[in-house]
Amino acid sequence: MGSLQLGPTCSLQVRILFHVAHKKKDEKALMEYHEKLGETVEDQLSLASFHYLQASYQEATDIYKTLLLEHR
Image 1 (tube, one colour):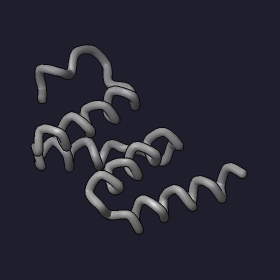
Image 2 (cartoon, one colour):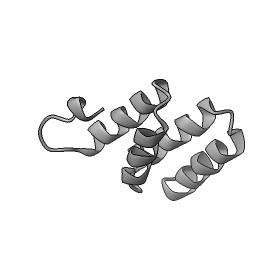
Image 3 (cartoon, one colour):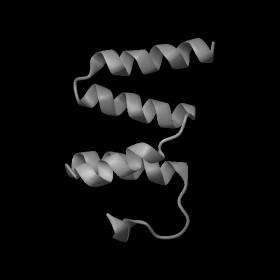
């Protein structure tokens, strides 16, 4: 994964690398990028989509509900 990180990191890069790590089944990188996800709407939506892909529907739903309540 390290070769993909050129230049300064940004939240979009972290989200993309989080999903790439999931796709490649790289648990170490997945946890590394999971820890870097913040509380922004975009990061939380990315996390919710990951939970949905893992069939953790309740966790995904909880994130979606929280975001909905915060941004009415």
